[in-house]
Amino acid sequence: MKLNTMSTEQETVTSNQVLPTEGVGDAIARALADMGVTTVFGVISIHNMPILDAIARQGRVRFVPARGEAGAMNMADAFARVSRSLGVVITSTGTAAGNAAGSQVEALTAGSPVLHITTQVDREFVDRDRAAIHDVPRQPDMLEAISKGYWRVWEPAAAIETLLSAAREALSAPSGPVTVEIPVDVQRAEVPRQIVAVPKPIPKAPSPEQLDSAAALLRAAKRPLLWLGGGARGATAAATALVARGCGAVTSTNGRAVVPEGHPHSLGAFNMTREAQEIYRRADLMIVVGSRLRGNETQNNRMLLPPLIQIDADPTQGARNYPVSMFIAADARLALEGLIARLPEQLATDGSFLAEIGDARTRSEAALRAGLGPYGELADILSEHVQRGQHPWVRDVTISNSTFGNRYVRIAAPHLGVHALGGGIGQGIAMGIGAAMAGEKAKTVTLVGDGGAQLMIGELATAVEAGANTVFVLMNDRGYGVIRNIQDAQYGSRRVYADILTPDFSLICRAVGLVHQRITKIAAFSSALRRALDSPGPSLIEIDMVAIGPFRQAFAGPPAGAAGEG
Ligand SMILES: Cc1ncc(C[n+]2csc(CCOP(=O)(O)OP(=O)(O)O)c2C)c(N)n1
Image (cartoon, rainbow, N blue to C red):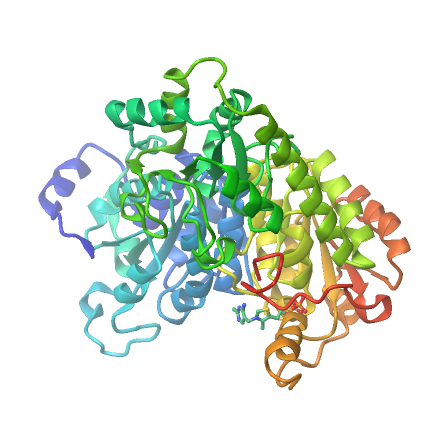
């Protein structure tokens, strides 16, 4: 735990004589605006009102009132991913911070640069278990567990510097959510006004000697592959240049489009198919960049891979899931650029191997498409629109995503892909809202299931109120489809707790003034989507999967399912 114990009472008094003062709440609102934050998500409460009241009075930052802290956290997370900048969420202490925790686990898993400003009871009661309202003993333990970094502000004079350090920590690779806890009496205290500079992430430079050795290995390789993860999202140009010089590529789901998804020498995110494994067997070197090679994309780390060089900004990730020949702890972009500088314009790699990669992807796509049955056409329509129109493509955990959404529907750039990497259902609606507010021109397309949607129904009101520019595509199979499939495959078809009551979504939409279309035939989807994309603001298209029928091939969850992630 990092506790801020600097005492500057004396200096504050001195400074007060020359500088105007303001409340810490005002100082935080001003600092957020000064550092370029445009949008903040959260829920108002007695313990954060000094900050939120100041945000409203100053009028420089847009505050989006979510209906719950879980949703607010998912919004800030998706905002951060799509805008490629800091996402900010403000919660209250105790239950409120706890409500955000599940969603913050997702931000932590995805390495999303989120600044979580939360609060505390007055300092004299903090950590003493005196059961003040909103108090929770050991709140720091909870926050530390779900944060890349955790800071508490004890001294008002240190509030802004702490905020800036936290923002820098969130943005620096390996990026992640950082929590700052500010007791409410600190928020009310007066401090001198302070000028704030935009926090810059600090990139970790690679060792030149290691790059020399890695370049030598790559120069000697005949069939090298890059495995690109979410940590390589900022290295698109360098990764694509390496592919142009003769490397093949494959991505994790979070690293999608680091190399253009349709590139003839890329497997895209078809990373665990039979065809992909054939390619791995032939490869003689794999450079893993910013990826944990997670179990659900590597058959629980049993998938055979060629000798590995690993590049990751997080030194603790070295060789964690696979043995590696070399581990370079560095920023992905700097490391790949350093490699390129040491390589000839064209590597002496095997051209037929590269051609086989594109062929393997095409065959993987066709096999997946064949298993979709009636939903193949829907996937084609979505893919066509999402890639060409450069729409952010946000997905909850639902069969349609685990099968086609995660890899078949192509995205135009890495930051346009947002999904629940940690596998938690129910985050899609809120992520769709956050993504839609991140400044992209094209409307966000958000894929959700009826089960997951029920966790976040309240946030549909937020979508309407905020005018979030997204279309929710709701795949309604009336219940937990993937759970039913797992029960069929592994539990003697005992379908317990999966056929839950599903609300009438047209009534829910009506209740909050959300435009609703329902389709019972796939043939109607194209025009419904076009109508939704052509009109501004939020709307929802409900796909009646009971009327349309099942997938041709049932998806029964990871890791046995052919398509991997669930
Ligand atoms: C937070 C969380 N709770 C429970 C689960 C287990 N789970 C995985 S998929 C699923 C059902 C999702 O239902 P729905 O959104 O309708 O999608 P479908 O499976 O029907 O396509 C459940 C309960 C989970 N992944 N995450």
